[in-house]
Amino acid sequence: MQLLDLLDLSLQGRRDVLALEHERADGSLETLTFGELDARSNRMAHLLERRGLRQGDRLALYLANRVEFLDLFVACVKLGVIVVPINILYREREIGHIVADAEPAAVVVAGSESAALFPAPTAVWDVEVLARHAAEESPASVRRVIDGDDAAAIVYTSGTTGRSKGAVLSHNNFLANGVNLATCWRITSEDRYLAVLPLFHVHGLGNGVIAWLLTGCRMRLAERFDVARADELFSSFRPTLFFGVPTVYVRLLELAPEVAARIGAHMRLFVCGSAPLSAATLESFRARFGHTILERYGMSETLMNIGNPYEGERRPGSVGLPFPGVSTRIVGPDGASVGVDEVGELLVRGPNVIRHYWRRPDADAEAFVEGWFSTGDLAMRSADGY
Image (cartoon, rainbow, N blue to C red; front, top):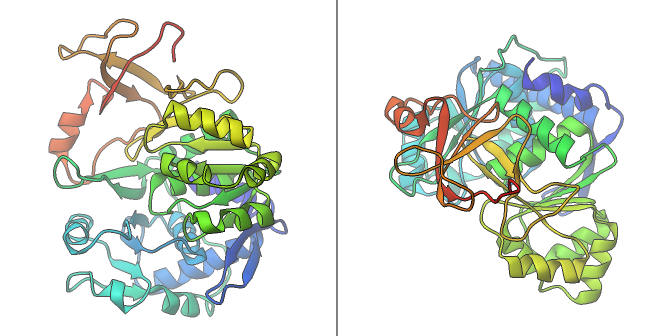
């Protein structure tokens, strides 16, 4: 099975169901059904093939949140083309390294200012031009024979300890992660997901987009989180599901108490990750919004590893319990497991974990120890497993 088989539960199985709301360039709101999204991605896939892309090629996306990002991602999934999302805050140095390392067939950007950041002779395609040309292509279905272990995306790490490495996420990695989140967080077609996190990051793409397409819920895509628009977005869309990072939740606490209570009245689940959430923020948010944020822990190389339970205690200062199929160890400098409440390095393994970095056997040798992935993060486990 490949990732497309799960996405087709909505793209094919819910063709007439409203799938997406997003703002056009003129500020008006456009809605699309899953069938319309399927056709858009088919047209984009035909155009990418016409431009020479083949299975195993890389296509880099240097884009803020927009519907064409989704078109391109799903088109690449269908073709077996590997998506390389690039952080839009990156400039020449970081961009140059990623382009030299991943060797994408092309980079998709929005506007000449972004195009100028890429070194010659990189093929740079404007997203607006692609969208116009794709609209002229056939909506006929696209499907290629793809193995579950084939790469779906290469996501570059932040590179805080040296030049960034490309984490090769497979179709199976995305599949396993999506099924876990839909199951453990009870995401269904009845949910309404407000997406504000950047799609170039695994939090927004690997969690949000995959869970949306897998479950067939309705998504409102915002270009970014803006606290000045938070009341408007939450009130007009009335989401039940929201993924954020700690800074987003700190900013949401700036909303007036009556606004927070109104938002909380129709919400089902707030999820937080990408950085530690303080106990003070969790408690303040619970008091204001009436919801206990579900904190979880993941990485670019692993997607989601550990999460607080949907039913049960969401413990402040803890990321909870390993997801189904994910095993964990906490080890000392000698590689031996440490005891309860002792600090050590967290090791993980499971179907969510990459098999290797892109063209970095040296990094593979350092990161993988007898089948375990070394996260480099410190952790401790309580007596009850949190």
